Image (cartoon, rainbow, N blue to C red):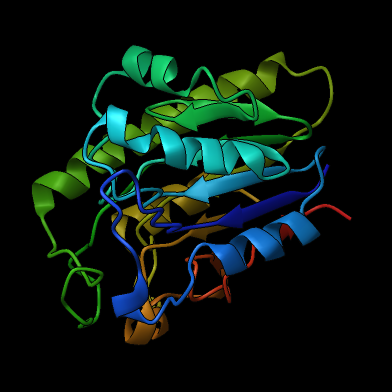
Length: 245
């Protein structure tokens, strides 16, 4: 099983919010073509937040059906624009239940799939972030309370991953999946990067950054972890292969 990721699909929802004003002309058709060509039915793919412009569950069903029609087993996590997600895991599970290829989600929890155990949370902008572009698809301001809350959620997810790992009869590879960058291009440690690196995943994938903001994210090796940016435009509107032959 190969493991892919794509972030920030920003699907239109029943609100019909297209991405043309951001230069994503024809989106999501180019992504669908690349995804269908690259990902197989037995592969897994992480959707790293900002899945849909929907604001409530009833508005997101068409976007979830679009994801379900793509090949691969999907693991979802929340982005800062995923207002439809809500705070109840049981309600979210009910919303996702008609879509059989969506096999799990990160919500203070982890997901075991094939040879991988995936942990993560949404995160937030930290005080260590360099200046970034603003606007609707720009940066969210640093907020100490949000960072502390996301640290707790990340810790719970990693604890769940460790428990799943103990239950596995075969060795598993740890993966961290988040929405906001846990580390920036200045390579200054953050509360999130310290937690990720203590978890010791093979790879940490994130999204959130777009356009001129893409350069603000750290990509490469740091603290024994390979950091990968997989937001749609940073990834060239194609899933990014993280692991597997």
